[in-house]
Length: 148
Image 1 (cartoon, one colour):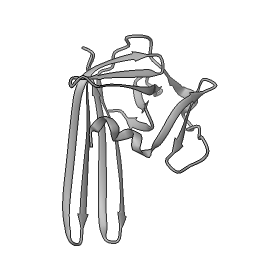
Image 2 (spheres, helix red, strand yellow):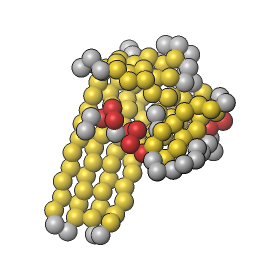
Image 3 (cartoon, helix red, strand yellow):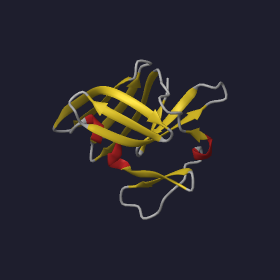
C-alpha cells in the first residue's frame, strides 16, 4: 500500500462551519477534536520545516502490531511521506514500509501533495501552535500528527 493512502484509513475529516471535524471509519457521527478551535490553516505558499508523525499499536491473541506514519517538510517546498508497520506474533513476525516524495503547496486548510511519480492528492490540513508559537501538531487528512 502506498504511503499516501495510509493516513486516511482511520476515517474522514472536513471543515464544517469553519471548524475541523472528523469521523472515524464505522462511525455515523462527526466529532470535533478538543484542540480544533486552536488550529489554523496556512496562507498560500506557507512553508514548513520539520517532521510530524503518529504511532499506533495494539495487541490481539498474542500478536502485537505497531504502525508509524511520518510526514516531513522542507522550506524548499519538498515533502516525504512514509509509513512502517511491524507485527510480532506467536507464529512469526513481519514488517513493511513505504515512502513517497514530492512537492507540497499549503493554501488555507488545504495541502496539495504533488508526488514525483505524477500523482496528486489534496488533503484537509491545519496546524496547532503551542504556547511557544511553534507548530506542535498538524491535522492531515483524517490523521493527527505530532511535531518535533
